Length: 91
Image (cartoon, helix red, strand yellow):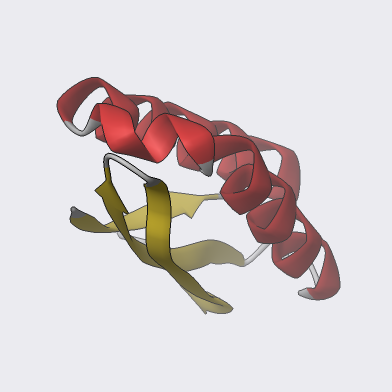
């Protein structure tokens, strides 16, 4: 099972909430990811904390992961994230 999603917000705190909500959707659709949800959330939060906040820009994260399980348990697991500042979307 694998997933990939973008998350965008104006602040670090808001971005962490968006990532958490997206991970909840992943777990709802792919219950196998319940075993790594907390680890992904913690790692994503740590990466978000590294990037500066800028009132004139949004924070954008791209999160992806995969897991393979058999009856014997998790056989393979992976996770990736990128976080950066981007121009705010004109409204």
